[in-house]
Length: 243
Image 1 (tube, rainbow, N blue to C red):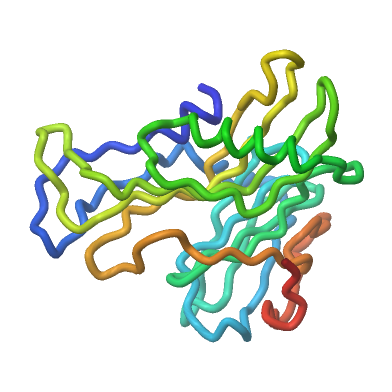
Image 2 (cartoon, helix red, strand yellow; image 1 turned 135 degrees about the vertical axis):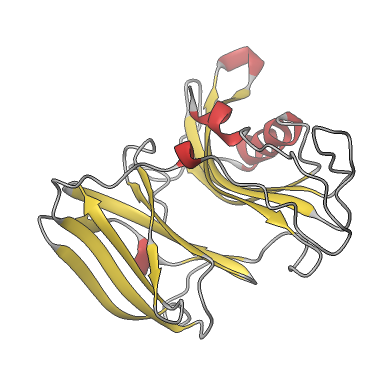
């Protein structure tokens, strides 16, 4: 099953009241299982933002198939990844009111033109009609024929959501945070090659609606893991935020 197929594994199967979530469980196949034979990992504690995490995710920088979800500790401000193979990892930290990420989008200099970006925006807009609201937060790549690009993307379903029993889920949205890969195939233009969903949320009646604010932070990029737990210490994501 490819990454795009994984991103569509969202099953709404129960009837719910207007002020409750459906309780749908996200596909367990979205994340890689920790390797019990690997001693590597990543630990960090958040000083700012001063709020509990909703989730923490680590992706092997040059292998999107390897995506891990952290254990959240104590008051929800500390994360711990165990069982990571040796390599470099990019992190994404999810909060109720926004998310921070450090995904490496290209190994080369970003040469995308304004026209490239407009075409990429149009291509993303046509893809996955289930989501009616889409925002590209970052996009980088190379221009020209056979050019390639990678984007940090947020998609939102704000229209009617039905269960498999055709019951409407009231006052809810579905949000997806993902990476997208595109290629310039010449006369046809930019095409969406694949996506890798990082997290999908059911946004319930009491949750923050709409597109979550996005922040890129280099502290979360290319974290080298060897044969022990890499301790990032206390993290102030406000201090070095870069947009």
